[in-house]
Image (cartoon, rainbow, N blue to C red; front, side, top):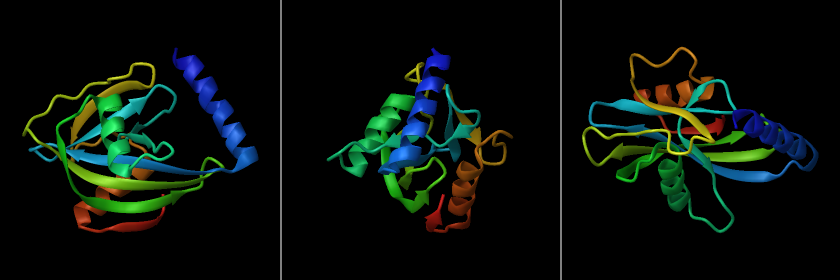
Length: 156
């Protein structure tokens, strides 16, 4: 299954290289009561990432955020604290704009899991001082911006 997903992702990147579409995305810096951060490992990418995904046509950012958190880490109980920032990601040959939200679970200790095994290999809580060594550089930058109290704008 993971091989099929990798092939689909590779085909999408080729299509984006030709078409150069503008896309919108959401990601979340999800924190629990102990200030642990939720990260996901996709079946088709090598690193740990903040959970999130694409915003569908005519979909609100908050609706997309709730859908992605439910689909990726089975999280339904959360509150949005603020927008961390809006970033442009041009790394995959598309004009991708990603809104990052800081959200807190409504219960101090929340269970998360890889809700969609086709897309998500693992979902796990990490202490901020014990992030995995293979976290994506952009995810690490977003966490560090949050820790410094910054609001980010610019490139992913």
